[in-house]
Image (cartoon, rainbow, N blue to C red; front, side, top):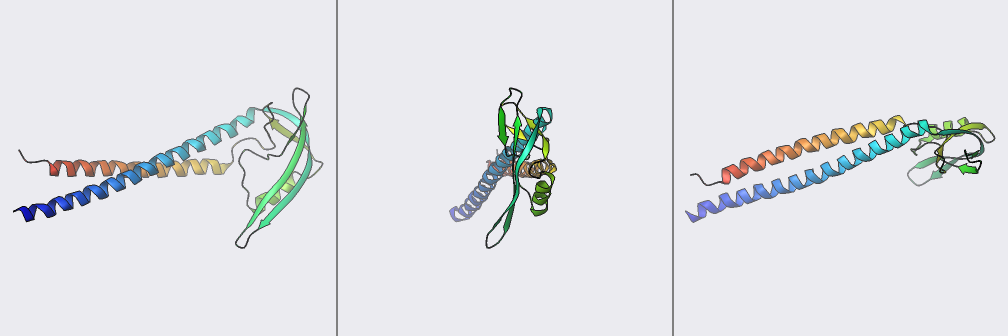
Length: 177
């Protein structure tokens, strides 16, 4: 009799252990994806705030495409600097094109062509020294937000399934009255 109950307990422990590991992984994944979604929301809100910043006329000082080559890839970076005068009359220099960095080769080339050296431009600034040439949120920010929300939703469903499986295991382990 003793030998027949031990395998059942071992099987139940094995099930609990696997369920605990899966639940912990789903919980960590859910927390991380939710944090990434919140970070995306923060980036979108900040980017959209630039639409309401002060606008000053400025001039592009330097505009060049930097290409960094490694053994496996190329990285394209538009190197653009500009000068503008803020509302307090101080001359400032900026280098941000927009709030979100990262360009592929074609996008980087378009940025350098759009902002050639010597060109007069509108500079959007917050009055504290943070400035951009292109206000607003890029479309990829919305895409990342959607990705993180869908992934956190899937992990949330996995968590619910784990909790339901744990409840079934718990009920099956309870002694019959």
